[in-house]
Amino acid sequence: MAANLINEQLQSKEDEEAVPEEIWKYVFGFTPMAVVKCAIELGIPDILENHEMPVTLAELASELRCSPSSLHRIMRFLIQYKIFQEKAVSETSVGYAQTPLSRLLTKHGQRSMADFVLLESSPVMLAPWHKLSARVLGNEESAFGAAHGGDVWGFAAGNPGHSKLIDNAMACDARLAVKAVTNGCPEVFEGVTTVVDVGGGDGTALRLIVEACPWIKGINFDLPHVVSVAPTSTGVEHVGGNMFDHVPKADAAYLMKVLHDWGDEECIEILRKCREAIPHDTGKVIIVEAIVGQENHEFKDVVLMLDMVMMAHTTKGKERTLKEWSYVLHEAGFNRYTTKHIKSYHSVIEVYP
Ligand SMILES: C[S@@+](CC[C@H](N)C(=O)[O-])C[C@H]1O[C@@H](n2cnc3c(N)ncnc32)[C@H](O)[C@@H]1O
Image 1 (cartoon, rainbow, N blue to C red):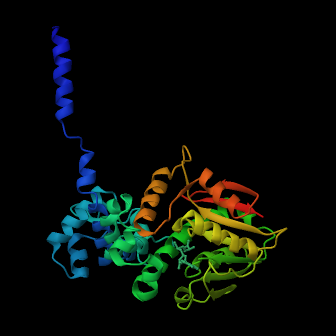
Image 2: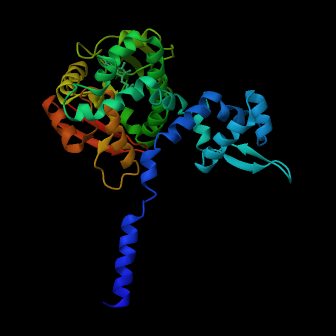
């Protein structure tokens, strides 16, 4: 046997035996989420944001009243993950500073995603992930139900603290998504004078739509326990109710990240109620949701993660391909729709009766 053939065989045996680094991502996959949650809870992004200069370990430990040793390890990890960065304070010392990522983790920033991290890393939302295989095997109606009984919306109705966590998390995402919609396709709201946001949460999305398009009068429609604690805002009326019973009338119904919480049958019911709520000749439904399977989409991986989140947290919810969207829209009696790409993991689907 030629020497280079033997070498090649030895090399391929070694390659087979080597453990790819990739595997550790799955063994310790929870770590980045947990450590980022820890940093948010400690308020580290806020502390760094409030200092003009980089903050040394001693200063940070003193502000947090904790021992520098654990803090150093947390910060070393987060620097490696490019959440924070180190910058020179003087010729001999360095301090911690924000990065574009950590600016998304301050508690009250306009683009903050901190509440979304806190929701997804909460014990309530983590428990159903342990029931995913039972859900796939059909042993459980839903992973969330197996963990907590009932569905996430019923759970939220009975647990105001968790409901607030959901509303705050949804508001984070809404701030980014609505900006992407109003910047990416402002024509969607042209000629529309009233909009009902169906499942609009605490009304953040509609408030931002009305701010961007002040000619619009908004109706924020959600479950009574959600709207009863929603903040008031100019141009937005909160209405409590059940979208499976009726949807308040408006020129356009706006549905953002609502239909993905439900199976096809429920989606068709919700869409039929929206169809009844809008004018038959000039009305439209504006859906802001992910579309699975869009080649070269920059958020393709996020969409697939979100589909898994739907499997863990909802009973029959899922992210849909364009073919699956076509099916539910057609079954709900809609004849025509267009899709628009925006700078987000969502797309805009405009649907006409
Ligand atoms: C994933 S959240 C989306 C919130 C908001 N659209 C956004 O994107 O920020 C789904 C919303 O649907 C609401 N919802 C669930 N069941 C509902 C029902 N039967 N009638 C009205 N709203 C409902 C929930 O309370 C929640 O606010």
